[in-house]
Length: 438
Ligand code: MEV
Image (cartoon, rainbow, N blue to C red):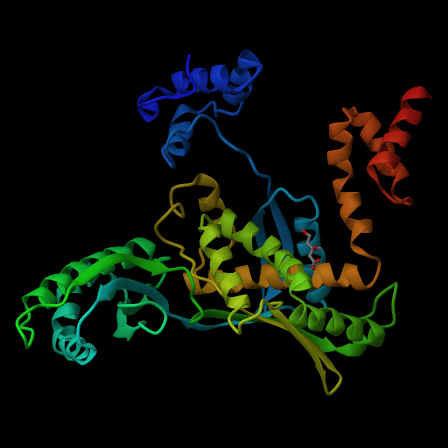
């Protein structure tokens, strides 16, 4: 065996496992058994998962939880969430229940525009290029028609095509900047296919065009790719109720509202806090994005870029009181799909979509944004009242007990003990020891 290999992807799954456990683990037999333990007994189902990606050797489970009682635009939803962090689903459920009696969540899609760019360099006269673009634009668009036929039939397609001069940022750098509507598809494949086609037509047409002094300036396509920055694919979610309805066990309603607003404002001005504030929002966002088979890396990248759109990184939520009414609001850029990708392939994604009532992409934007806002509300609510650890460590207790090898009856006893006490790793260890000794 050797740690360097050619043709790994061509090995059978079993051979891949043999190679990896023999070369990179101290317990080949144990890990081989472990990896196989996570295969699904149903070989057809396992095959579907194997084929999602390259070099699959096993499945990596995440818990799929349900956060019920979400009242959104006057309809009740139960939201599926795929997430490993113990307190996330509980926090979402708590926030949902809290707002259930206070008018629920309101959300609307503001815009659904997506972006793609052909990046190229050009070293000639700028006005010649601008004129060439204007002259060629109808042909560039016409040439895309065959690729766009199905999308156009669904009401989507290219919205606008511009030439952008970026030479103030980088010498000779220009773009064809295209905007698209992709309806229920996230649209990455559609947009990238359009862009690559556009780039080829552009390169060909520009080269064939006469240049005044004969010597044609060099035009070189660098790359063609969609942008995951989608500030014009935006959804707005909010919760709002009279301040005096924000009753808390631990705190007077007015003080609670004031502290919530302070917490939100701190995240607006302090990047160290803003990142954690937004991380909490993404706890909810990513969990629903994953459960519905969407690309959470694309969402993460786009959301954080949006949070920094004004030049410094800021919290994504705003909060205020107006005429005695407290409001927490968030605008979130979300390019999501409910057709294509994994959405119809992954059996659990099919389940999530079913539970959510087969949402359109616009509806899914609303559900995801609400999950993010709920998470933010729940986190801030804990932070400004009891502190985060009380709830978080209670939820984490089972992980600690599993790590300590507690049996089911031991777990029950320890959990009962911590109903009224503060959880920590050492405290849990101590209580478990006492139970074992008694
Ligand atoms: C933990 O996963 C998320 C929080 O840190 C978010 C926040 O601080 O707002 C609790």
